Structures are given as C-alpha cells and as structure tokens.
Amino acid sequence: MEKQMPQLMPLVPELMPMIQLVAKDMVAQNIANVMWACARCEIDAGAPESLFETLAERAFLGADSFNAQDIANIFWASTKLHRRGAPVSPFLDVLPILSEVAVQRADAMILHHVPNTLSGVSDVMYGVPTSFFERDWMSSLADTFIKKAPKSTDTERRLVVPQV
Image 1 (cartoon, rainbow, N blue to C red):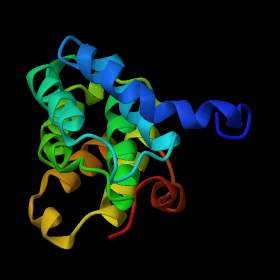
Image 2 (cartoon, rainbow, N blue to C red):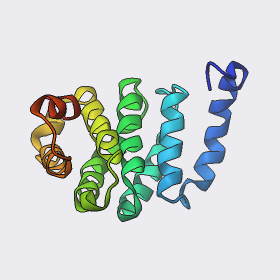
Image 3 (cartoon, rainbow, N blue to C red):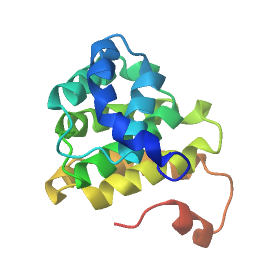
Image 4 (cartoon, helix red, strand yellow):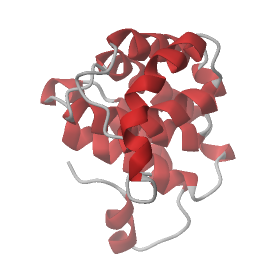
C-alpha cells in the first residue's frame, strides 16, 4: 500500500480507534489481516496497546479457528511489529498456542501452508528475545512439518526449515 497509494499511509493511525471498536468481535482471519496490515503499514510504538491486547485475547479464545495462513500471518506480523517497538507482547504468549493448533492440523494442511507457517516461525526466531525459545513448541512444529513434507532431499529441507 505504501508504494501504490502513499497518500493513504497517514490515514492508517486514524483507523486504529475504529479497528479497536470492532476487535472484540473479530474472527481468526480478521485478526490475522489486521495484524498483517499493521505490520505492512509500519505501525510502531505509537499504536494503542489495548488494540493488541484485545486482538491477542480474541486470538487466544479462538485459537482453534485459525488456519495455517492466519497463523503464518500472525507469526510474521508479531515479529515485524515487535522489532518496531509496537506493543505486541500479548501476542508472544499466544504464539505457542497457535503453534499447537498448527501441529494438530498439520495433516489437513495443504502443502503451501507448511512453508508459510515455517516462514512465520523463522521470523519469530530472529525477532524476539532468546528467552522466548526456552519452550520446545517451535521444534515440535518444525518436526511435524518435516514429517509432512513430501519426500525431498536434505538440501530441500534445509531451505524450508530454519536453522537455529
């Protein structure tokens, strides 16, 4: 959006209060889309913390309704926003739960969801504090996806699975 319609970028902060009004009623895809849009529009520390708290609470309560693309978008956006200082720390607590959902649904996922989700995990690995990785949920997710991957060479697997 910033390249195609730069005149709209100044309006993004003005939309935040309106988004916050409807956030408590959002479904999984809406939450993922708002997070993605905030990251793409380079929302930073000036964003209202209460918006991300509300979105994280909705994500927690509706975790079982997220599909792989929603999960990948949440991972990616949380990392991008966190790096810019946006108040997304509530989402860091939700990511392990969304990871469990991805593991549970791995057999039902279509193949392109695997690299999309792992890409989101990879972004998280490089974007948040090291203490965040003391949990084994990321390796569980990666192991599940490796098992799901079609027969491939070790070289192909290294391209998909982030090395830590």
